[in-house]
Length: 116
Image (cartoon, rainbow, N blue to C red; front, top):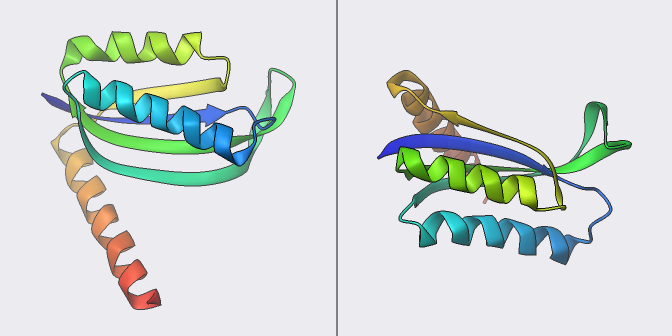
């Protein structure tokens, strides 16, 4: 199983519950097909660098997970079929990117502990 990172942008016309529903749908697709969720981040609504489908903002969400290489095609097909998703990108993390990602997660945890 390889480690992957997927960022997707949901359309800004959705309400908060609809965005959470879309995120849950993709999380379930990953876990139901033998994937293992490592980390998940909600980046919220951000301005796009350029308009996509005549929209200038979108809800960003990041998944970091382990899955079989054959599963990625299925996941990306689901992203393409969903009208709520306006853009997505999946990358395979090599060992250096995985180490960096682990350090980044640890820093986020440390920040959360300090804020409490």
